[in-house]
Image 1 (cartoon, rainbow, N blue to C red):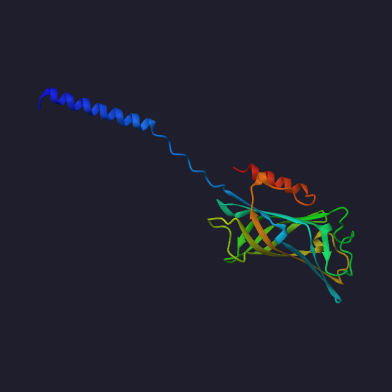
Image 2: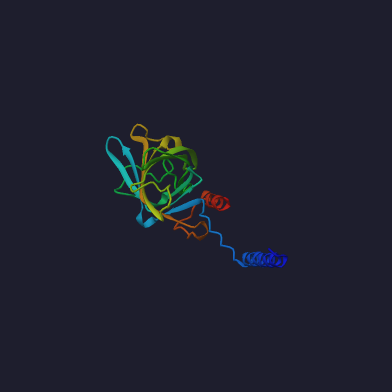
Length: 233
């Protein structure tokens, strides 16, 4: 093999290496795929929702009714689904009894609506009790008093905590509140202490920065709740 031939091979090799390097430099970088938002936020759809109220008035009747104005948000972090944020707010002034109740639930002995027009539940943790059932633990605020509370939730279709996350999902919920823990202590021998609140409706996926205004004045806890979600990494 002659020296001239070796030089020729070496020259071709160098040219090929340079061409490969040049092509690599000119190759456009693949765009980075957008990472999914770790915090999934859902908002209650009022047109599909019912919030019921029941308290037993012994031995005469049961006081039943519903609330016409409410708001709720449900958020969970896909990195830790058991740590959730659930905030439900009820406009207590929107109480609509099925018939004239024998007790005045709007007055100072009960909801004291002039001083406390809203009540809310803020849930922090959730424990799945079945494939489609869960218990959310947190704090309930009524009549300006806050205490620990739990709410039982049923997902009629399927649990929303698995990918692909649904755009919306139905839910049903039930909460039993001991009214005496929230300053409603009158008529204990006539009216049972347990108030039963029931909820049913749909939660729709939302963007925190694109939320529309609700139909009633919300307490400051809602602003704090949403600000906390926006501040999360």
